[in-house]
Length: 290
Image 1 (spheres, rainbow, N blue to C red):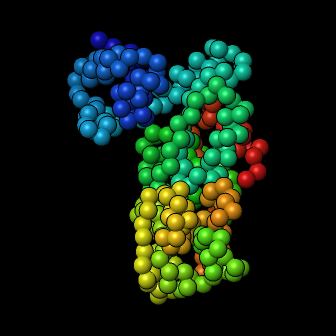
Image 2 (image 1 turned 180 degrees about the horizontal axis):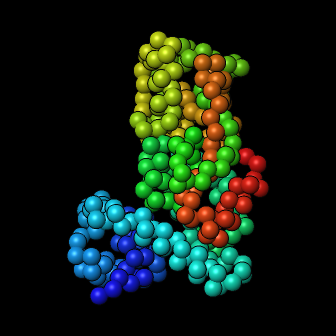
Image 3 (image 1 turned 90 degrees about the horizontal axis):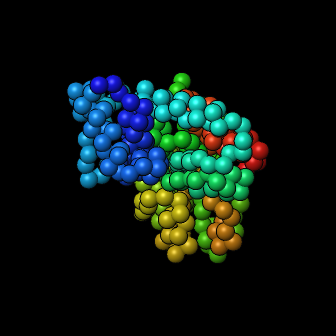
């Protein structure tokens, strides 16, 4: 029995989406059809390729060996389908986009959705470490991420540069200053993203280098949650500038000890660069000055 195109594509999409149901949705088929394709693939190979659990699916060693080729095959199959359809307008498609901060990702998505209304988009915020892991595991189309780890398998295009700043309420005493020292910030309740974030790593190192121990530190899941906490007077936060749309109730204040410049980039697995839906998004990246 030979392995079929449907079996390979089903396997690739189950891993990309993290579930049978997600793969079925992306492929436009039933969950039972995807399950049957996976079962037939495992029969032909004589080994299990996926382990199903309560949190989704995981690859077996055999599945890990197969996935990279299957993922590249699925992308190539999509490119062939695009060629066969010709060069008509991009009337359908799907993008899975992740980021480690709301901006500039959401500005890019808004522009792209306006230019290509028939392309569906899944967008999720992850901490920096999780975002890089999903890229390395080939489970995402595009990542908008700060200081991505270089790799020969990734295409990286710089978008914008920024520095870490202190976020405070507009009526906070710090909001009246042009800059505030890190020691003064650490004397307040300091709000930071969860471990695994670039911010947590950068700020923790800078505090240690300057011999500063925060009076009290509160860890939260993402910038949107941090922003709400600052507005609720929980404390002050440290995050990259322009990480969210401007808010009249929130002020960014420079911190001299955090002067390093960081680059946020659009990152794409190189084997997906030939896809029209990827090219169109990178075109928006090139056109949008953020």
